[in-house]
Length: 157
Ligand SMILES: [Cu+2]
Image (cartoon, rainbow, N blue to C red; front, side):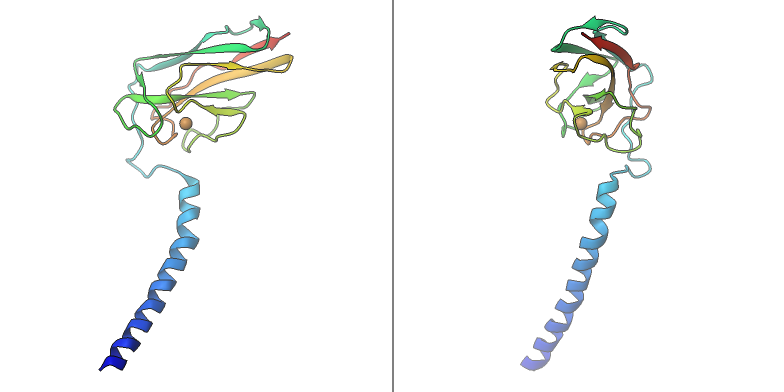
């Protein structure tokens, strides 16, 4: 009797291990894609708008440059906080708009302001630079419709 129980347990653990290995192999691939499931997008009101208050498009500035973010029709909430009609700012520097179906990349060209900041002071090399704002939800995924500013070009002396 004891032996049968033991053998059943061993058999069941083996199956469990296979399930765990399968989960480890497949789940990270799914998570890294970070695509919201259908119906799981965060809605933004149609009247929401996002702009770079300063500098202005075409400005010539000196580094460091303070960039001020202007959001209307929605509120700012820190990353990780799910609240209706809110999001946090992302500044895209010298880079095209990322695919808005995915979580926004996080690197030197895609800066996240997950603390709810509404401006940043940047050190920029002399030359021309492009700046664009994109709002992300609590998971860093753009809203539907995406709340995005015009892309501006500035020159740093
Ligand atoms: Cu973010």
